[in-house]
Length: 89
Image (cartoon, rainbow, N blue to C red; front, side, top):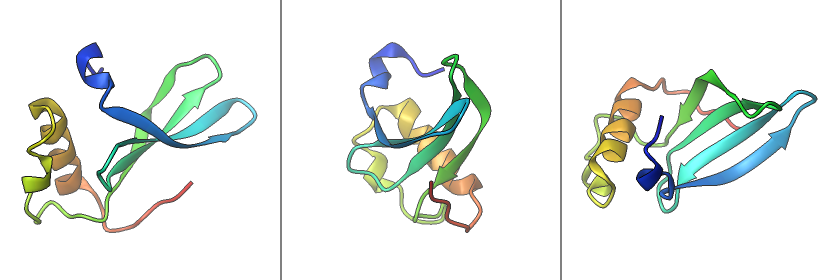
């Protein structure tokens, strides 16, 4: 769970409604990375998600210095963990 003080860094980039859930793209303004989440009509999120970034973990992470440390670490971890495929809602 993201601490309340850090939630303001995130923005909804795109949404798509399905019969019993929403597909939501969540991003940080000014960064190319984003997460694709499935949110049920009850408001609960599916624990599985997709992370999308044009940047790989092998690239420099200087772009993350402006972010709170926990968010920068999370994005760095995701970049290092992602596969090379790109997803889109």
